[in-house]
Length: 81
Image (cartoon, rainbow, N blue to C red; front, side, top):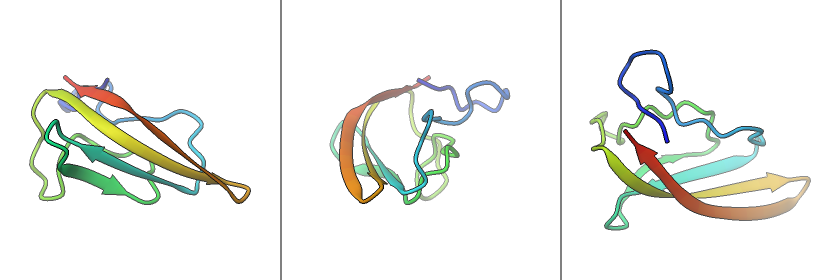
């Protein structure tokens, strides 16, 4: 969870130990893509591609990483406060 409200605390969605070769996609509850970055650099501030702040709520994500030629995918949930 993170709170991108500009107070300097938890303003960005951060993934610890993120390999350099990665891709992150975030979807709203209707399955629409609201954010995408490749590579993701722990710099998403909860806004969509047009710069509009997303609503408080739960979003799903798909993280793809490639480490030493081995690809893996992880799916999960995140919450914007």
